Amino acid sequence: MDNNITDLMLKRITSGKPTLISLTGISMLPLLEPNDVITIQKCSTYNIDDIVMFKYNVEGYLLHRIVKIVDDNVFLCKGDNAKRIEVVMFRQILGKMIRATRFEETVYEEPQSSNK
Image 1 (cartoon, rainbow, N blue to C red):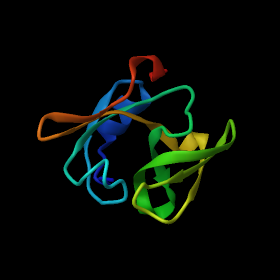
Image 2 (image 1 turned 90 degrees about the horizontal axis):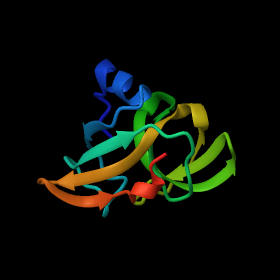
Image 3 (image 1 turned 180 degrees about the vertical axis):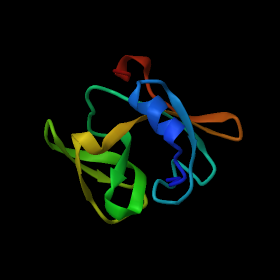
């Protein structure tokens, strides 16, 4: 995940506006590659298999998939290409990925009914 997230990006996300972010890292291969551009949208609820952006300890912002929901406030997340599982609180989640593009081609799009 790109840890050069600007204050303006954070403000847009937290205000509920879809926000474009360019990725770095390989933890979500093969679905997402470095330099893919994702759209993050704040949601009121999150589900298993949602790919969410969250602030994680000193590492900064990560983009990983929810693999288990412990309760309404605790989620287990993991990169598709990673071994570690992160315990993430609801308040740490900025939003979920609703779209990803690579060289202007869509590689992922969230179904419209899932955007909350």
